[in-house]
Image (tube, rainbow, N blue to C red; front, side, top):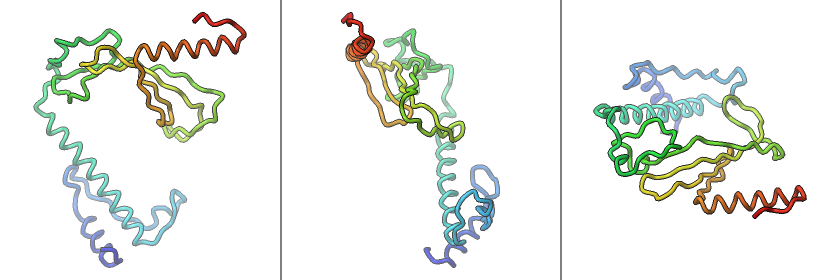
Amino acid sequence: MNDRKGLNAEANSTNACADAETAQPRTKIDPSRYADGYGPQVPAAWEETAVLAGTRAANAIRFQYVGQMSARKNERDDEPAYWLESHPCPDWCTRSLHLGSDHPSDRHHDSATDYVWLDTMEPEVFEQPEHRFGAPQVNFHLTQHYREREPRIYISNSAEDLNLYASLDEAEKLANALLALVAQARGKTSST
């Protein structure tokens, strides 16, 4: 249905229906929606297509939520994770709740995240809480899957294009190399 008549018919049929999960009436398509400068003005057929695509995407997310909640309705939050009996939660783990029903890939421990702002780098745009510029940051925390022997250090950045995992030995080598460079730059001899 790429023609205008087909789009109008589809839009009219969906506008009269209520959302199946929320029982809220769907909003009518308002062709002057972007007249206030919020977005570009486009022909009515294009606007209708955009609204329908957004409605479909929103409904897919709603149905996913309802499905997940239905799947969890019989879960007991007070049921301890049985896998903690053989692999106890380390002292540094900050996850508030481990459940026996956790998916195997979610059975891991995480520490609190530390970060370092890189003030000499070009600022980047942060979407939350509002569009603003700020110094990029490097984030790092301990993470350990319940079957792993030791934790690893996860290193990421605020632009979300850096995702590194280092073993404790690798992280120690990295830290020592960085400290040696800092000592050299400050005219001191390295202790390593």
